[in-house]
Length: 79
Image (tube, rainbow, N blue to C red):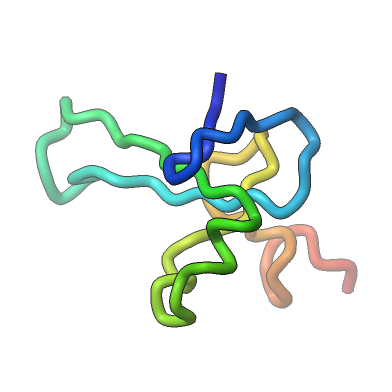
């Protein structure tokens, strides 16, 4: 089960206000090294300084990264 990396609170599917980021070497590093998803609940996310919030994206439980559909000028934008 997915949990907040700071407080250990359990993620429930469909919960709003959760944030995630992927950590690891990625394509520039070792290919066999897996990326690790780190989750934060809304309360712990609000405690972060503004500059550190930039590396997090909203976690919906379905996506592996930032949802491009929510950004203007990208896929899924209604015209």
